[in-house]
Image (tube, rainbow, N blue to C red; front, side, top):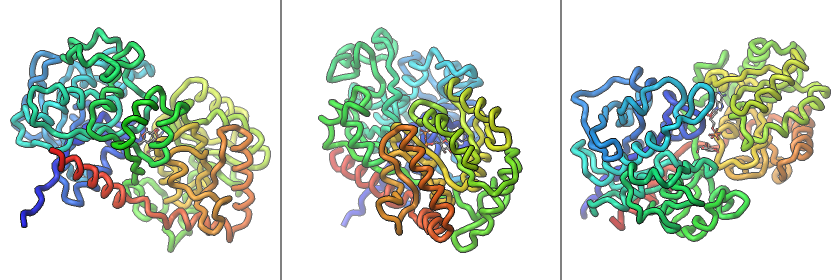
Length: 487
Ligand code: ADP
Ligand code: GLC
């Protein structure tokens, strides 16, 4: 019998942990390819050559060149490998677009780069050039796996490619709210035909939408949890794409994210002052003590609630701000890490000023502190209005820090609610995104916290859960295989 050929995948992404990260996409872009690789898939990452990657990664020579028509010349493809996982990486090096200080999408003042349309148009075009075997890089992927709007044009480029023997494309939605919508006049410079600009193509309310291009032209679509896969087919959370997604529901699958178990392991985590584990839990107490000291929290043995989050409307932190004074009056302390929208940042600054010694606040992005809060807090709050998957509730359960979450998206799929199954519970779920519902849920958690036998069971249940990529990677492979069959 013939051995099935090895599956080959190009994983195109605009973020990659630990080099360039604004959220969970970076984590997934490092850990999912690593998990696929472990099962024998030949997966390679394509991402822009942002400065941190150029500075920190060794570069193979000679560099390859890729002609891209949206810039009318060649861009370099630099080959390297991820230092932690050894996954091969292609860095798309076009300095006018990617070699600049600031974030991947925004400048230091939090404004979108004005040339994002060209920057991520180029990323999509490069992905499609590799996927349509126009390059001489020695890699002809059967599957082009795209992630979010920044790579959404790639399936459209493949669709209109003159080379009909090309890869199948998979579009993964991490967050439907970010859509990459631009005026239609950009089409010619992107080298896409006008025929793409219609309702069955990339047109979306008078704009060219990168997200829509991906959803329309990809052979299959996934999103990052089964619940979110259902929610995005409704008007409330479909962000205008619900009709299209409902139409394409036969090729839409929700696959819950996993976590990078090597990065998030309480017994080896380099950021923690003390290791701990299910069998030797004592170190968690030390993590709390050190964290409180670090954040200048006063020394009472009060419950400590952790938050690590982008500060945006999605994350529902305004609900927490409303009720925080009540909780603080009841003896609760907070450790909060995040950055984002100015009114939310200000809200937390005011809270910290009003309650010195009770609120440890850090506005900014700090990977190490994120780990220390996840370990050192007693409980973790995520009042997200919607949450495609969410990683922090998994990290916190894994770290014995039960989460309190709103019933949405991946939060429902990864937390077992105390009210539903007290003996199996790993956290607390509330069922409407209101300050009152959040308060009731936190109060219930605080009641359980006072009863160590119950609390330790909730902690242990979370720590025992399997958040690995094993199952989910297998589901991606099944989808790849189905796509390969139709090649
Ligand atoms: P999203 O991608 O919507 O922001 P996720 O829960 O999927 O939500 O992933 C967020 C990731 O970003 C997690 O790894 C989290 O720890 C990290 N993170 C968010 N804000 C910060 C911050 N201010 N500092 C450090 N890490 C952060
Ligand atoms: C997005 C979502 C988040 C998800 C992450 C990784 O940023 O907001 O819920 O966990 O992508 O898939």
